[in-house]
Length: 132
Image (cartoon, rainbow, N blue to C red; front, top):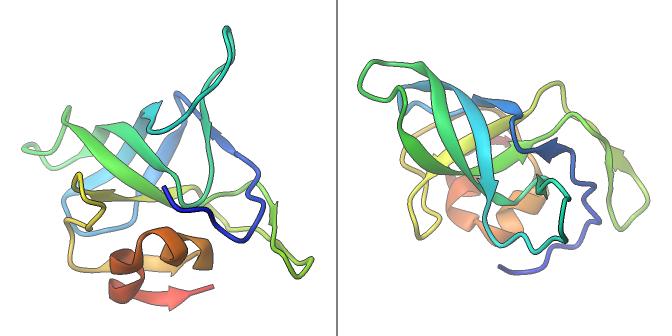
């Protein structure tokens, strides 16, 4: 994965529930793994804005429920710091379902998307209505 300019504090861990912000049919995702996480023994994997995760669909349409999907985190409640010194905070934790190449499966995204996501996944920012 490419590096991003902000020092993102990892605010989401395994077991966290995220809002699915796209129109794929999923409503709530539960984090079950973090792709590319290299931790130490007895530490829980954590993820932040712009990280790719493996998630299970908890709520959604009957054909999407209980599916294991890959997703990218686009918003997190925990504040993180940008290079210019400002701190960014969102109202909720949200993710967008993607395929293995990092391209979104849905055609639209509800709510704002963090600018740091666009540094790694430009396809997500192209379909976003608001980029903060």
